[in-house]
Length: 457
Image (cartoon, rainbow, N blue to C red):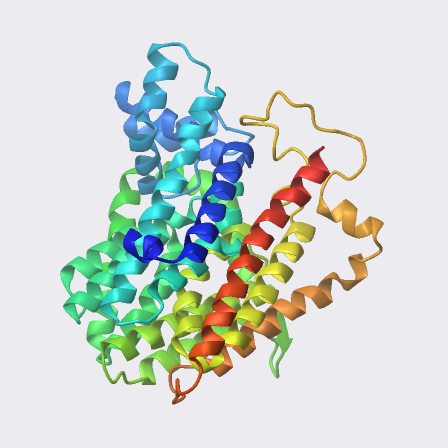
């Protein structure tokens, strides 16, 4: 994979080098305390294991909440964190080093970097198997996307973990060309980490299988690991997660259209259409199957972010499915890059406005290597919302959010896998668009860092 970057292309080296430098600054400097909760609770899991109270883990987190929050995920995510943070547990429990030590916080944040690199590698393997052109460019688009960089390196959210296992499951399906037992195992693990992986899985199942009995069997197998791993902890998990799960379910039904008998959930309406399209679609070969699968999954997450009050860092779930859509049709490369860059900028700005304590926040630099530098607390803008309000732009934010949705809808329409395409006479334009888009994307990554820095200092 690295040969694609080093292969006699100075522009590739420059842009990848700039991206790595910016990613390192993001990693060392920016932090959001949500990961601190799971980090601390993974150490509690190791404490419970040591004390022989493993099955009282959820109750322990209720008794000792972090920022008032107990453990609200299924157990596998805490097991993964506990394995990664075993050196931290040794340092804090046996050597007496404080849990807030900067090096330990960086180590705990490193799990996101680790799974990001694995996800890039797995996407590369998938694209090789499905004979995609422009492999290096596709990987650069993925790695330089604000949809990935901000959630993973700035906010240190760990949805990238279940994304990796989802991509791995897709890769195994492409290799096996059937719903084999190892595909089911990988997706079952991914779903147990976070339930969001269920949505790509059900699309995959409906695309590959048309017999109802087998569809039901596969869906049950996909949920099996979640069921098995939560049963021993069910009592405590039910108590601690009830409020969180109820809120998420309410959000799925919140946006509605008027219907004859009552309101109609926009999300459920759109999701059902996507599922029927998946079931009715027939693939010509494994590459076309993958194109249909990524397109439908990108359509699902577009629907999700258009209609559900979703946490901003979940946007990372869209990008591994959007990238194959963007690079497949060479005749659309220019409009694809324009629409995708506008979509990235508008949604990140919108999410910063509606979730100001997550993106562009003045205390983002207050935890890691810049923790000893004094931020201007109480002076000037606290977050991007203050900046937008100061500029008198707050009334335009619904319109900016609408631009994101329109861009994504048009990207899906013009790149749908059922539309025939031609690559005749587009090579020169492709090269030009690729070169320009590289620098634009690096500029956006740097701009987010600059704006956050200006708010903080």
